[in-house]
Image 1: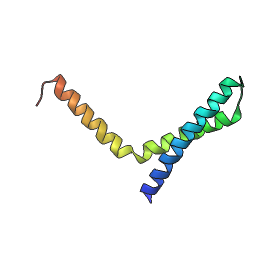
Image 2 (image 1 turned 30 degrees about the vertical axis):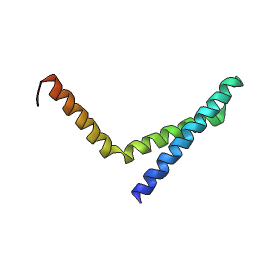
Image 3 (image 1 turned 180 degrees about the horizontal axis):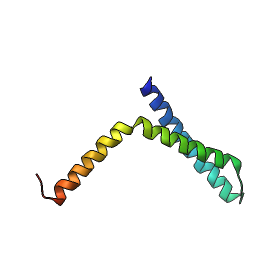
Length: 79
């Protein structure tokens, strides 16, 4: 179930980023000051990005732990 939710959040995030970009382009081309759909899609993108980080939390920690270990070994010449 969690993996299905992760896939759905990732898919929706890709779609919302695209829609936000398109509505931002429309807003800029038509010189609209307060284009409400763009604002709501941007908020939706932020919420889904946060959810995406929650689902990928363990993978992100493992990645950061590996990167920090490589940096520390290079700085202190550890093998």
